[in-house]
Amino acid sequence: MQERTKKFCNILTELISDKKITKTKFYTELGIKKAYFYDIVSGKVSPPPERQLDMIRILKPSKKKMIEFFNAAAFERGEVPVDI
Image 1 (cartoon, helix red, strand yellow):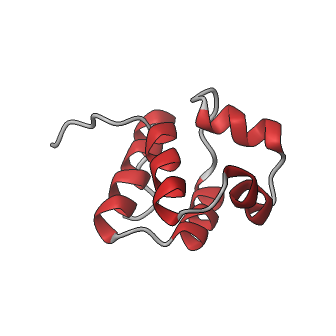
Image 2 (cartoon, helix red, strand yellow):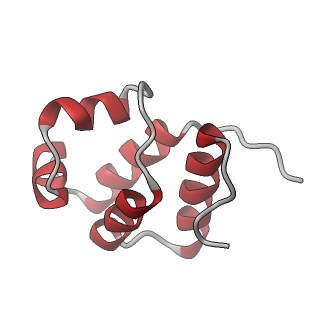
């Protein structure tokens, strides 16, 4: 099993930056409040699988980045990745 090195919050921040949208635009399009978004990007909370799918629909990352995203989220939540 491959060792996970990046935290979910860091991957999410990278994907938002790669998409070249502001954090405000992202959380507004996602339909969440600013405070909840900043809890996610600070690593305080991990969003549920349904919200992760919404994030992927907005960010449209590469397959490799998407797998990394789901694996990190599942690892931090102690769950099986949603993409399996």
